[in-house]
Length: 312
Image (tube, rainbow, N blue to C red):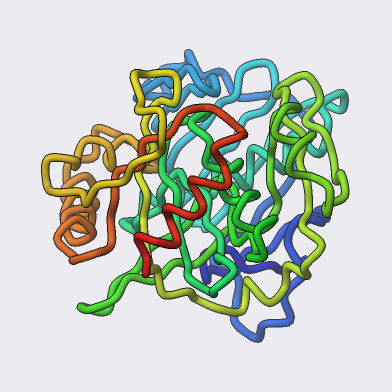
């Protein structure tokens, strides 16, 4: 099947129901193959260990043909840039839903970020007035919850875990990933009244994936002009009783850097390219805001009202 993500055409040898199949006449830039066989030995001298993240657990290794992204106990994603191939090695016992989640929410965003595009760990939504908002923050900061709250308030979900940003000199655009949401049980009980459960991620995550009622396909055929980007802080930190928002400035650059998707954090040339794009975001007037809010579902209505007020 063929599908498009971040305006790039992929071809896979297995179904990915989260993404509508594409009828594009463009050639696939990347081929994805699922192969349930022996996984590569990451300790081999053939691999140069690069980095390791803990949430989720990821090991990155470099080899002459590209990269290996390992999710211990789950799967290896071997990336060959020259051949334009992503080969997935796993076992027959691994949940296929989990494989697709790692591919769509981790591997492809990191791959696109590694080739110099600005891909950020974020959710995105349209408000009831049609404004496009992006929420940046670490896992557990409330990105998906806020996107779901926008939809429940009359808007629509555009993306749950990542967006790709582009600029034309005056405006910022996003290409959404896909419109599925992953919510914890407490958010699910409050925000899922007009959605249907799509799938669970086995024991890898406590979250459940949902699909909004609105058809996804319209979102993949468009880019959206961004009206506001909101940087979320840890809701468990010292926050005011009422939600607040302030304009960001260049001193907030580290918070944006923390939201970047990439494979190799030691790639200096790519880091410089991404840093320049982040500075472009911060220098645009009335675009980026620091949003402080408690982890309190009773405040959601006030948060959405504040966002509408900020965007005007």
